[in-house]
Image (cartoon, rainbow, N blue to C red; front, side, top):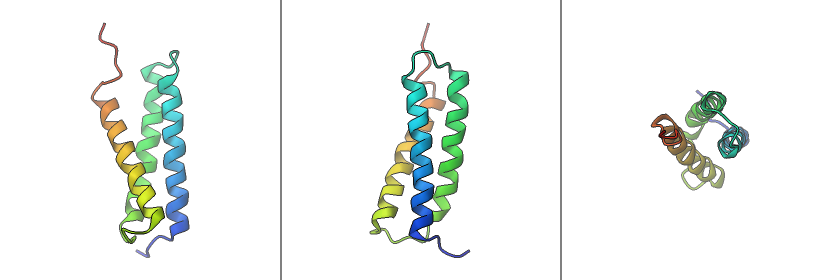
Length: 91
């Protein structure tokens, strides 16, 4: 497959960060239920999954690629934390 342009990577990274912001807003809202947060996590996964292959051919030193990789690391950590039940109140 042809290599992604930095612009494509940038746009995909923006979508990942928007999904992350949406997820964090839900997480920070006391009224949000896990049932409401679940779809936001699915959205995060979907966007991260689309971004990952775009990064493969990119130069490690490309600033866009660096930002995208940072975003991927943060998003993957959050998805893992959510799935491990870190945010479930133990009552």
